[in-house]
Length: 472
Ligand SMILES: [Zn+2]
Image 1 (cartoon, helix red, strand yellow):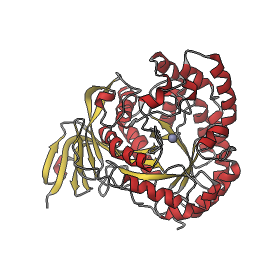
Image 2: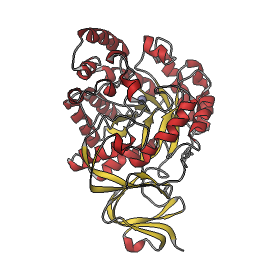
Image 3: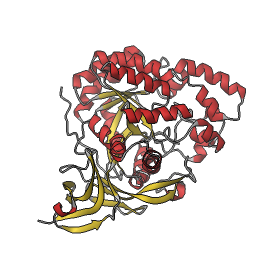
Image 4: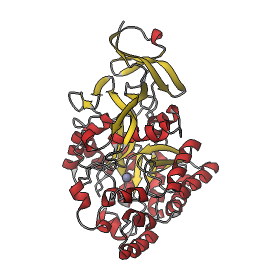
């Protein structure tokens, strides 16, 4: 029987190495991976002419519905318009956060799934933000529905926390303790996600630095967040999570100090997952100051310095940092740049289109990592942590046919002209890179080709668990 599609004459990036050949797709699944001669017949054969056949990537750090405006309607629009950039950048699965609210988690989750269904161009998971201690007993109920990760906005206190609807004392150890008790009841693969960064010293330094009126705004912003600030919370909350044997995932690690701390704690056997952002691996505060990026690159934690950037890369090489996300928000330029730098909301805008090309350029072309490692940090490891492997995260028989073909020789200039979302600015405008996704398949369907969305409709789905939470 003929397969639906065979991709051949490529370099296939599998979990165990790169092989010459291709893969066969039947329906939504990969049915064979190997040398061209072993793949069999297909209704459609695509000769990729030596290009790289890579697993569709999994971005586990996205925030829809909370940018210029906030609401379910905004979230649905973000899915509809802005996941097009996912296909452009080879992202076939995202995990995006539920709305920040006081309602039961099940309600927030159901609403988020409704926003994505029929609107998303890529598959998706929902990360539940746990904002109020009253929501904590609802964790097992929403875990039964397929939520594996629970985000705690540690790193905020006072007015900034209140703006998110958190009590002014922030996520206290007592709050987190009760949450870990509940997550532990659910068993694997459920886990806690935290934004580790001490808020109190940071607020003090923000007040001091904003008074100085420095022209190098992003460097000043970097100086508001002490290099030990992430480690302080990471360690405190890791101790609590570890008591309950709950894996703790630390989003957007930015500082060299934190990578050292994480490495030490891994040495003690703690179940900690370190994520950094593609943008942190590609730019520093002084570089972005030189480009006049100002508010557009104001993120928390901040872009830091060369030594931090290099330590993050080394963290990937040594296996301390295992996941790269984007922390994408759908900000417009007008919203982000109105008013004073020190008052503008934190966060970068859409990074889906650029993260794979940037990491290919900085990682592969500069010889920092190999293709198998790139696949692990952009796809495989997140899929494993979410209990979705090998349905997602690998080019192996039986997996969803989520595939990106990368032309390793194709050069491109990054920027808004290339993007297919509503983004009206880019942190990477004018940056030249080599190594560009030229085809994306979502569950067997060709949805992006040569920079254009060729899928007919947004067919992305909420991804059901492969691994069910053990305790449920
Ligand atoms: Zn985030």
